[in-house]
Length: 95
Picture: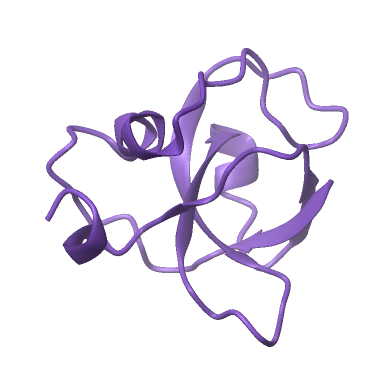
């Protein structure tokens, strides 16, 4: 399990992949989960969410699939299953 939180003010950010969920699929090497990876969530409609690890040592922004409800849970700590966090820095990926 991983501890993350959403990053505020990212709705205007874009990438060349078409969507942030596609960005995650392109660079994670994993298939998108069927259900939201937040513990005990069974929502199936997923988006690519901008998140940070709950870590003082790593302030990077990442993309991970979440349902719309958990994507909107700004500032709240979320426990998710072990899915790869993909950098949101497009200059390192699709930029």
